[in-house]
Length: 417
Image (cartoon, rainbow, N blue to C red; front, side, top):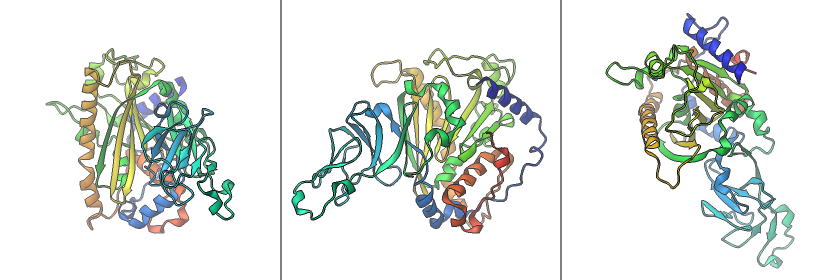
């Protein structure tokens, strides 16, 4: 990652020195309020966005042995993910083709076949083929070949399982492109789940996601100590916008953080290793000397680090309610379920940051639903938010969206390729 690191450092330096956006950068119109408050827009997302995107559904080590399965319901439709006897992980709709009962009910388990607990229709775990029907003689003209479980696109990347309802979905690597390439140095396949947090928030899922796509807010709500110091200096934040809605944000440390780490200045990238945590040695020095975060469109954001990091995921429950999950992964070097003291402190610190972010979200949703709001103005620092909305429209299909709810497609010339 040497070339991107030097290019990103140069961009950070330019960000510190700039007096405005780059030449030719577009002026954003307000983001229309209806995108956050309308049941109609939410239904467009449900039908045409969530049915066509790659989302993270679990870890391969959750179904480590052939025959293991887990259920996944965060796309609203019921899904079962199985580890086949041939070693391949696959995903099927958890829907018996007889009368719609689930073929498995437990969140996790192990089985030789997928057998509906209502009437006993049984399906093969490799291809979903219907293999057994009790009293089959009573079904006139039943064709087993036509009654197999419907399959979803499913891929495992670095130990994480991703699924996509679109049967014509681009392969995972093609869709996310350079984001996955840059994340591979974190050795995801060797990480383990450390802790899981979840909170239901009364706001639209985009309100939740947008809080983690910019650092414009950072010094205002994340200050620390009597001097009100912030750990980061938002003025130097470098954004990378990728095709298909994903992005990167690298933010330099503030002066107090730089001094605490023994750096000469924000650009003095060093190979910092915290001895309290197991370290992934391949992680580059830029990540160790900045706050670096990636977003995977539409609903996954990860602030990465060499000693472990969380995935933040935003799941819409309805137009005005979101479940926010944050799941920490790390090289696990301790035995048992009791977290080491250092990890307890780390999780408590991250939970505090999350609480500071979350406390604004419900009031923001209420304000968005107020007649006082005419629209949401977005600035150059917040361009990752605009990038998210552009891709939402492209995925839904721009022609399906009311003209007054669309966002202008203006960022393509500024994408990294």
